[in-house]
Image 1 (tube, rainbow, N blue to C red):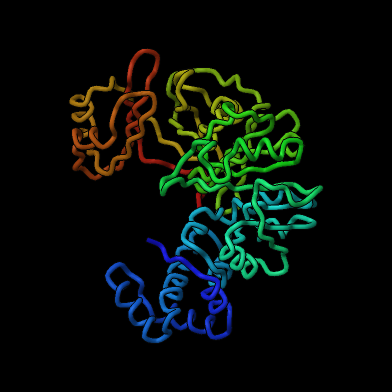
Image 2: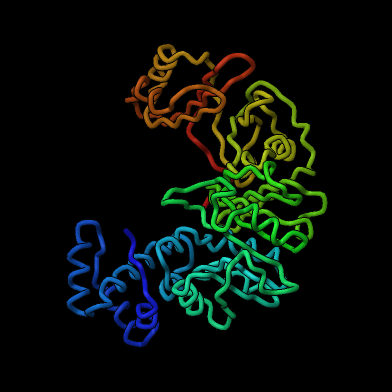
Length: 394
């Protein structure tokens, strides 16, 4: 169970003594699974009642390095659930750019991760939350921004763009049920109807099932889908209902919308088999992205694509040959190719990649890829070389 901070903990952690204590423990504690019990005991002997809070703070700051620059991670305060839900800074910055020049009210500000990004672009930023500890942390994390205690479902500002990030855990389990979010998504949409509204959601949400008339943007970072963001009509791109945004840590950005042409065509495998970024797939824009880059589908119902070159910022597999999806002949062919490290991708077929790997038992030295996909009425195995990248993903 994660540590439960108190207002007294936050007051100590933000004091000169607390800052010095956290720095001392950050330099001296390993905080590995094997050392954790001993680390907590040592911190307790040295810093008394605040030992556990200090240990948890140091551990959370180390985890935060995966989401934000070191300078931010090393000074901010976090709760476990607040850090889990915090947006990676590159994604938060992208969203904040769309709010440039606006007056923004983050009605679920939590520990202030998104407030910090919005404060760099918006004319005015206000945060609110119901949890008093998270509010104290937000005030420390984003100095100079007004933070209030208020219920997200009770409008407390006028003339602002409302930003909300409902909690996606219910009874300790992650949920994509709009009504099970806290606060519930249908309630947010109803209460702020007619207002400019931005709602960060889990990427597995189905916006077409909501009473929502705006833009649904799916965002990925370095190949991993991070969020779906709902933009109300006043904030959406003109005429756009669906958008995919691909971000890379190296600064690469690509966006595709449902207004782009989608007549990509269908054809036989070319030089490369390409698996589109998850944001493209989740947003339903595979054909649009394929058309942009001169690719074609292998089957009109499946997201695997093919073409003569890998698009910038994407990855693909050099195509070698195609076989019917039968484990024994596939295993024999892969062994003849000295197959060693093996990546397996499956779409549109009832094939378990782990079970297939056990059946193939690759023992060679040549890295290969097997793409299992449905083409027409047949399940097919495409044998390819190892994944190649058109530009760095990091």
